[in-house]
Image: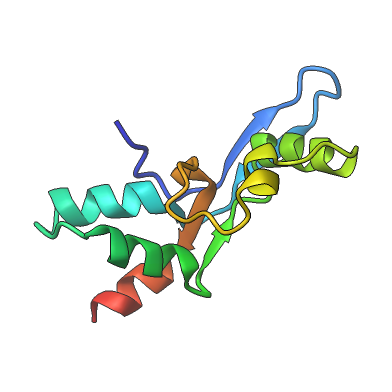
Length: 112
């Protein structure tokens, strides 16, 4: 089940005891947006529309997420995305679509 809360989400780092932002306010994952449109709006978006949303200027990676920070640190240390290295022109990759986020304001503007 998705989390429809658009409030800022934080967690306490157990080592530093500092609150770390894991999701900024007014962001929805693309997966949650697709689920809401289907359940609430009765609209089933096909893969082409989902791709357009993911490629739009209003979609972004959640750079505050701990998993994004972890992956970024791996890539900066010299590790590579092996799939992308061997198949640079591949499309329709299986990616974690929870890593793509859209601003709630974008969602409502696009519905008007």
